[in-house]
Image (cartoon, rainbow, N blue to C red; front, side):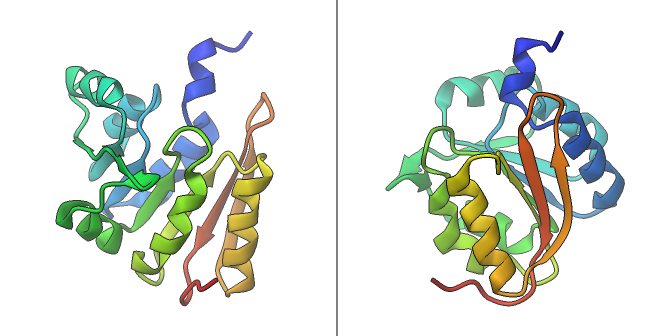
Length: 165
């Protein structure tokens, strides 16, 4: 039986893929969860951006490098530090914020550098899959689609070019 904590983390398959492909590159995780500590133990250059103060405190207790960035207009507070991380990430994992606000990532995807890998979690939800489809229609390359044992989907893409609405 699956551990209920697995419902609040990216799948082991996604973590393994990131671990195998990140190398020495910068991995930025948007949205911390039960898998953040595992990810940080296996990826040398990783930071989590978390909107929820309670989760940020949990990450701190676990020794997970993170930035607490409360939501502003439905997305993480785009401080200079957060913006710089989005611009320099080699791998960007989009697994937050929680709830229905994930679509708010779309206007910020232009910040991600060309060639970066973007992991879109929870793409079994149509509103998240629609973002993947728009990225693909703008020339982003689909690298992998993963389905975890309890039905959650993740799409891994490489950014090529701009994304406009």
